[in-house]
Length: 132
Length: 174
Image (cartoon, rainbow over all chains, first blue to last red; front, side):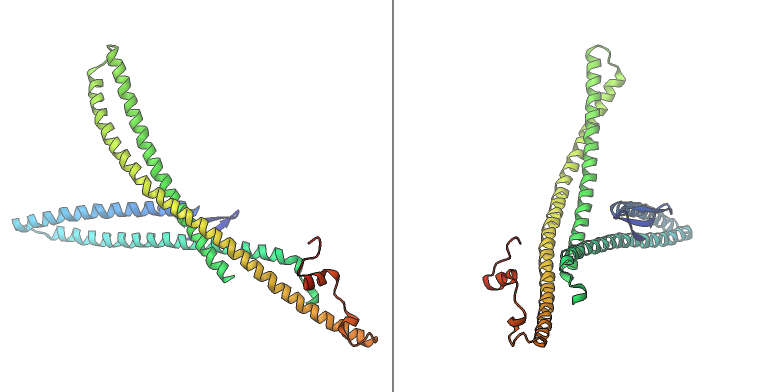
């Protein structure tokens, strides 16, 4: 993720959910990242639902005295998937914070530079130049 | 510039918060409008079915559709109310964020004015020090040509500077 200034406007160059690189205004970049988080959260919800089904199935298998190894294997897979999704959600949230921080920092620098330029202009007629 | 930098950082953060709040409000408003539009479409369809029935052209399928539309309208109306209720807090957040931007922008303007004053004051002090140096040089040069022992024998204030120093008034035309 990189902040770019194009024609005086702030843009975020980032890799989208589809893996394609694109340059977006900060708010659009955040909206896109939020959509990614939403999708990841939906996937986690689906995993939770499947895990609940597996637990029920495992209990039934235990009651029936049948093999539960397939259930346990799938549960381990789901656990890994969930951990991976959680990491990706955290990364996306960090990216949102990073976009906010970078955008506001760049804009703040622009504001401060504009104020300094304004003061410099005012001082120009009072320049002592070589006499100082 | 540290104060300016700090306020500028707060202004830009507030502006971003306001933009995010406005964006969230716009999205919620769009959602509410979309629901309102669906309700209007469902009502229009019900009206068309009623007109057809009154003209003796109604069908059983349309009667069933009318009943289904009633259920849809009820559900959509409830969703629309929820969406409208969600707008109020979002609107308050956006308003508060915009007020923050306004207050901080005013604060930045005041800080800019103060920084400008301080910069000019510093430059005036530099110019005054330069003037003192110039007067000393002129006095020394005056001594070399026997202009007398007083500084005023060599250097005299202009009428404009005299007016500022003695009368505490700016030169005419300033």
